[in-house]
Amino acid sequence: MKLWDKGFSTDKKIDHFTVGNDRELDLILAKYDVIASKAHAQMLAKVKLISPEEANALVQELEVIVSSIEAGTFTIEATFEDMHSKIEFLLVQKLGDIGKKIHTARSRNDQVLVAMHLYLKEELMEIKSATKSLFKLLLELAETHQNVLLPGYTHLQIAMPSSFGLWFSAYAESLIDDLYFINAAYKIADQNPLGSAAGYGSSFPIDRNYTTHELGFETLKYNVVAAQMGRGKVEKATAFGMASIAATLSKFAMDITLYMSQNFNFISFPDELTTGSSIMPHKKNPDVFELLRAKCNKIQAIPNQLAFIINNLPSGYHRDLQLVKEIMIPSIQDMKACLEMLIFSLKEIRVQNNILDDAKYDYLFSVDTLNELVLKGMPFRDAYKKMGQEIEAGVFTPKRDIKHTHEGSLGNLCLEEIRAKMKTL
Image (cartoon, rainbow, N blue to C red; front, top):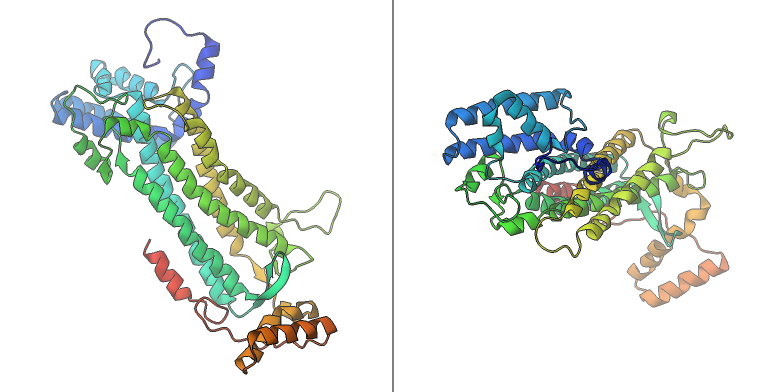
């Protein structure tokens, strides 16, 4: 059954090409289509386009369909084009002509729009929740290891002293910036597009404010053309939010793979979180973090992929937009998996103590030693020259009892202030 079926057959190759993997993706979206259909049926009764009894019958049957979706027994066979056609078929099968009334005053265009908005709202909240869990864990690790020093690098050259407290809390605070993007995406998704129909509204006297309230949207996407133009835009906003988180996770995963290597040896993980080699028995590879890095780099490419699909499309619906689903849904699953895996793994991280006792890290303390001379009255430029000469002559003696006190530094991580910043989100 196809909702646009006019009584003649479509060549199977054309059918396969136009439908693609929509059936598989729609198994994920079907729940949201049913939720929207329930609100739509109730609205139709409110404006007297169907009777209250018909609305009740539709809602009851839609609840049965939701149960089958949640139980994992709902299927979309090859005879159906998508979730919309299968759900309507089930309604007609059970309710006859009443089932045929569910499509009154709507189109597949606003059906998929509202389903996607509801889906993205839920997924964005899950991503936000997982990100906050990672944030919490990072701050706990920063607190636990705040006094364990770590080399800081610029240009991958030894630069200045850092600490595990700084390292962990740096990534925690970076996640706050990422969640600003997630909040912005949620704000865009939290607008009800239902009632825009094919993109130009309807001559039926529908009540769009009613469905907005019933579906839990903050507001209505008022202009029906603007609602239709939101297709692809809301996904792109979500993709930017995910790409921001992914950039943070990818950089962190890169740090971990470096710090795990024997050349650095700053951190380690239990054997069960590493993998071996088929020919080198000594290997403990950071495969989890390498894959996490790669998956997050893929996610960072999603906004660009979406841009190439939706750029330069005129207003109104175009079939190009169908391809947005097959980009977004798998990337959301990857994003959640990366967050889950990083949280799972980080709980087992082991940090190395006394890293800076190695003489090769002596030059990390050149700036602090220089600053001590300045504090004693020597002009900065003279102190800098003196320090350079001592290093060149091989007589530099590092001042290791460093004292950093300003906000956000080694000795003042401002963890409570960072926690407070997260709470504002």
